[in-house]
Every structure is written in structure tokens, then in C-alpha cells.
Length: 132
Image (spheres, one colour):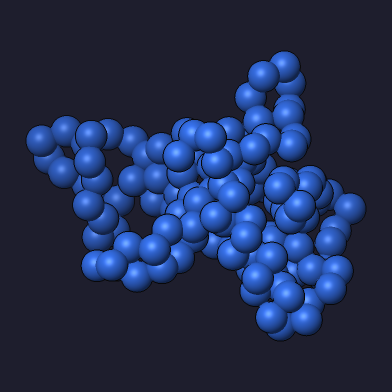
């Protein structure tokens, strides 16, 4: 839902570092309030990777490092470490409530690509299902 996304932090001239939907920011605010976690932020990071791209993790954190990028999006403080930032540039985070898969956060990043596979399949030894 394009109208729900508000960008608060821009790197360079036009590409936002991270966008957070209204649903995602509301969900984070609710969790922080419910758990009485004043001073905490949503940390988004690279949780793993492989030939099919990277996967992201999220945590509530109040331990910020000098190398972290800290921004505010829709009233939520978002923290990204120096390694993860290149994979998250231009990413959007949404909160979805799918009746079949359940509720949760979804990160969509244009920089989380893996390599494409030929007819021979994946040679990395991992068990992934890549879609080209």
C-alpha cells in the first residue's frame, strides 16, 4: 500500500535508506509500549545469506554502537549496523497479517539478491529454493 509508506531518512539524492509502513511502525510502537521498553529501537540486520540472497532479522535493542546508523521512520527509531546497511539500502518493512501464514514483519530489499542458477542448480550446498 504505497500511500501507507512514509520516508523519513534519505541517503544520496532520492533513494530512502529504509521505509517503514504505517502498519509496521504501529506494530513496533505497540510492542515497545506493551513491554515498557522506553529508549529501545528496532534493529534490522543481515541474519544470514547464501546463494539465493540474504535474509534479515529484527530485534528490539537499546545498545547502540558508534558505527550504527540510527534513523527515525514514522515515529520509530530504526538502527542498522555498518555491515547490514548496504543490503538494506532502499528496503521496505511491512507488517502483514496473512490468514494462512500468520502475522509478522516482512523486509523487502532490492539489494538482497542472490546469484541465478543455471540448469545445474545450486552449487553452494545449501537447501534453498531460488526463483529467477
